[in-house]
Image 1 (tube, rainbow, N blue to C red):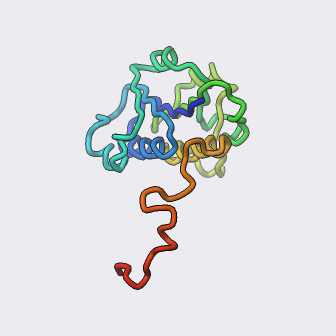
Image 2 (cartoon, rainbow, N blue to C red):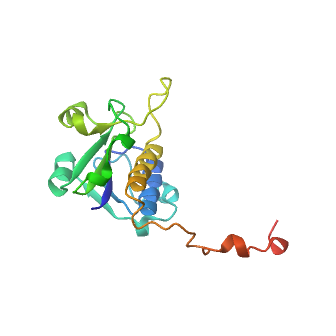
Image 3 (cartoon, one colour):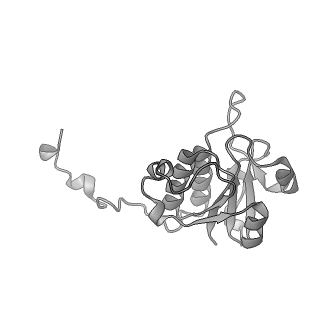
Amino acid sequence: MSVHAALFEPEIPQNTGNIIRTCVATCATLHIIEPMGFDLYKKTVGRSASNHLDHADIHIYSGFSDFAQKNDGAYFFLTRYGKQPPSAVDFKKQEKDIYLIFGKESTGIPYALLKDHIDQCFRIPMSEHARSLNLSNSVSIVLYEVMRQLDYPGLSFSEVQKGEHFLESYDLCNAPE
Protein backbone atom coordinates (compact mmCIF):
# COMPACT_ATOMS: atom_id res chain seq x y z
CA MET A 1 0.00 0.00 0.00
CA SER A 2 1.26 3.46 -0.91
CA VAL A 3 0.23 6.93 0.23
CA HIS A 4 -0.58 9.61 -2.33
CA ALA A 5 -1.42 13.32 -2.17
CA ALA A 6 -3.57 14.71 -4.96
CA LEU A 7 -3.93 18.43 -5.62
CA PHE A 8 -7.10 19.45 -7.41
CA GLU A 9 -6.29 22.43 -9.66
CA PRO A 10 -3.58 24.06 -7.50
CA GLU A 11 -3.21 27.81 -7.98
CA ILE A 12 -0.22 28.97 -5.92
CA PRO A 13 3.24 27.74 -6.96
CA GLN A 14 4.82 28.21 -3.53
CA ASN A 15 2.21 25.95 -1.93
CA THR A 16 2.84 23.26 -4.51
CA GLY A 17 6.60 23.61 -4.00
CA ASN A 18 6.17 23.10 -0.27
CA ILE A 19 3.90 20.12 -0.92
CA ILE A 20 6.50 18.59 -3.23
CA ARG A 21 9.02 18.87 -0.41
CA THR A 22 6.58 17.24 2.06
CA CYS A 23 5.83 14.43 -0.39
CA VAL A 24 9.55 13.72 -0.80
CA ALA A 25 9.97 13.75 2.99
CA THR A 26 7.12 11.26 3.46
CA CYS A 27 7.80 9.08 0.39
CA ALA A 28 4.34 10.01 -0.91
CA THR A 29 3.49 10.26 -4.59
CA LEU A 30 2.11 13.62 -5.71
CA HIS A 31 -0.72 13.80 -8.23
CA ILE A 32 -1.64 17.14 -9.79
CA ILE A 33 -5.04 17.50 -11.42
CA GLU A 34 -5.05 20.27 -14.02
CA PRO A 35 -5.48 23.03 -14.73
CA MET A 36 -2.61 24.46 -12.68
CA GLY A 37 -2.32 28.19 -12.10
CA PHE A 38 1.43 28.14 -12.88
CA ASP A 39 4.25 26.32 -14.67
CA LEU A 40 5.43 23.49 -12.44
CA TYR A 41 9.03 23.80 -13.54
CA LYS A 42 9.54 27.54 -13.05
CA LYS A 43 11.78 28.94 -10.32
CA THR A 44 8.88 29.89 -8.03
CA VAL A 45 8.01 26.23 -7.50
CA GLY A 46 11.64 25.11 -7.41
CA ARG A 47 12.57 27.52 -4.62
CA SER A 48 9.70 26.34 -2.44
CA ALA A 49 10.46 22.72 -3.26
CA SER A 50 14.04 23.44 -2.14
CA ASN A 51 15.44 21.48 -5.05
CA HIS A 52 13.47 18.35 -4.15
CA LEU A 53 11.97 18.08 -7.66
CA ASP A 54 14.67 15.56 -8.62
CA HIS A 55 13.44 13.20 -5.90
CA ALA A 56 9.70 13.76 -6.33
CA ASP A 57 7.31 11.26 -7.86
CA ILE A 58 4.83 13.56 -9.63
CA HIS A 59 2.00 12.63 -12.00
CA ILE A 60 -0.15 15.15 -13.86
CA TYR A 61 -3.72 14.61 -15.10
CA SER A 62 -5.97 16.53 -17.46
CA GLY A 63 -8.90 16.47 -15.02
CA PHE A 64 -10.43 14.51 -12.15
CA SER A 65 -11.92 11.81 -14.40
CA ASP A 66 -8.46 11.20 -15.92
CA PHE A 67 -7.02 10.93 -12.40
CA ALA A 68 -9.78 8.56 -11.20
CA GLN A 69 -9.46 6.30 -14.27
CA LYS A 70 -5.73 5.83 -13.69
CA ASN A 71 -5.67 5.44 -9.90
CA ASP A 72 -7.46 2.70 -8.02
CA GLY A 73 -7.50 3.06 -4.28
CA ALA A 74 -9.17 4.51 -1.21
CA TYR A 75 -9.99 8.18 -1.79
CA PHE A 76 -10.22 10.67 1.09
CA PHE A 77 -11.20 14.29 0.53
CA LEU A 78 -10.10 17.16 2.78
CA THR A 79 -12.85 19.74 3.09
CA ARG A 80 -14.17 22.10 5.71
CA TYR A 81 -17.51 20.31 5.23
CA GLY A 82 -16.13 16.99 6.44
CA LYS A 83 -17.56 15.72 9.70
CA GLN A 84 -14.56 13.81 11.07
CA PRO A 85 -10.87 14.59 11.61
CA PRO A 86 -8.17 12.60 9.78
CA SER A 87 -7.33 10.89 13.08
CA ALA A 88 -10.82 9.28 13.05
CA VAL A 89 -10.02 7.44 9.83
CA ASP A 90 -8.24 4.14 10.45
CA PHE A 91 -5.67 4.24 7.65
CA LYS A 92 -4.13 0.95 8.81
CA LYS A 93 -7.30 -0.86 7.73
CA GLN A 94 -6.99 0.31 4.13
CA GLU A 95 -6.22 -2.54 1.75
CA LYS A 96 -5.68 -0.32 -1.29
CA ASP A 97 -3.43 2.66 -1.92
CA ILE A 98 -4.48 5.76 0.03
CA TYR A 99 -5.25 8.91 -1.96
CA LEU A 100 -5.58 12.14 0.02
CA ILE A 101 -7.29 14.72 -2.18
CA PHE A 102 -6.91 18.45 -1.51
CA GLY A 103 -8.77 21.26 -3.28
CA LYS A 104 -7.53 24.40 -4.89
CA GLU A 105 -6.67 27.33 -2.67
CA SER A 106 -9.56 29.61 -3.69
CA THR A 107 -12.56 27.28 -3.72
CA GLY A 108 -11.51 23.80 -2.58
CA ILE A 109 -12.93 20.67 -4.17
CA PRO A 110 -16.17 21.04 -6.21
CA TYR A 111 -19.27 20.40 -4.11
CA ALA A 112 -20.64 17.79 -6.54
CA LEU A 113 -17.47 15.72 -6.20
CA LEU A 114 -17.58 16.01 -2.40
CA LYS A 115 -21.24 15.04 -2.28
CA ASP A 116 -20.51 11.91 -4.35
CA HIS A 117 -17.90 10.91 -1.73
CA ILE A 118 -19.45 12.32 1.44
CA ASP A 119 -18.42 9.33 3.59
CA GLN A 120 -14.79 9.85 2.60
CA CYS A 121 -14.71 13.55 3.52
CA PHE A 122 -12.79 14.75 6.56
CA ARG A 123 -11.66 18.05 8.02
CA ILE A 124 -8.84 19.39 10.15
CA PRO A 125 -10.37 20.60 13.43
CA MET A 126 -9.88 24.31 14.10
CA SER A 127 -11.45 27.18 15.98
CA GLU A 128 -14.69 28.71 14.79
CA HIS A 129 -12.78 31.88 13.89
CA ALA A 130 -10.77 30.17 11.12
CA ARG A 131 -12.31 29.08 7.85
CA SER A 132 -9.31 27.14 6.58
CA LEU A 133 -5.56 26.59 6.79
CA ASN A 134 -2.90 27.13 4.16
CA LEU A 135 -2.95 24.29 1.62
CA SER A 136 0.66 23.21 2.13
CA ASN A 137 0.18 23.20 5.92
CA SER A 138 -2.96 21.08 5.52
CA VAL A 139 -1.18 18.55 3.33
CA SER A 140 1.62 18.29 5.91
CA ILE A 141 -0.78 17.77 8.80
CA VAL A 142 -2.77 15.07 7.03
CA LEU A 143 0.18 13.25 5.44
CA TYR A 144 1.96 13.01 8.76
CA GLU A 145 -1.21 11.76 10.47
CA VAL A 146 -1.41 8.97 7.91
CA MET A 147 2.30 8.24 8.30
CA ARG A 148 1.93 8.18 12.10
CA GLN A 149 -0.89 5.66 11.88
CA LEU A 150 1.15 3.49 9.49
CA ASP A 151 4.25 3.70 11.76
CA TYR A 152 6.17 5.95 9.33
CA PRO A 153 6.88 3.36 6.62
CA GLY A 154 10.20 3.93 4.85
CA LEU A 155 11.00 7.08 6.86
CA SER A 156 14.20 7.59 8.82
CA PHE A 157 14.17 8.13 12.57
CA SER A 158 17.71 9.51 12.58
CA GLU A 159 19.56 12.36 10.85
CA VAL A 160 20.84 11.06 7.53
CA GLN A 161 22.42 14.19 6.00
CA LYS A 162 24.93 15.00 8.77
CA GLY A 163 24.92 11.63 10.50
CA GLU A 164 23.02 10.06 13.35
CA HIS A 165 25.54 11.15 16.00
CA PHE A 166 26.19 14.69 14.70
CA LEU A 167 25.19 16.49 17.91
CA GLU A 168 27.15 14.18 20.14
CA SER A 169 30.31 14.85 18.14
CA TYR A 170 29.69 18.56 17.56
CA ASP A 171 32.68 20.59 18.78
CA LEU A 172 31.41 23.72 20.52
CA CYS A 173 34.93 25.16 20.81
CA ASN A 174 35.48 25.21 17.06
CA ALA A 175 31.93 26.03 16.00
CA PRO A 176 31.33 29.07 13.79
CA GLU A 177 29.71 31.97 15.63
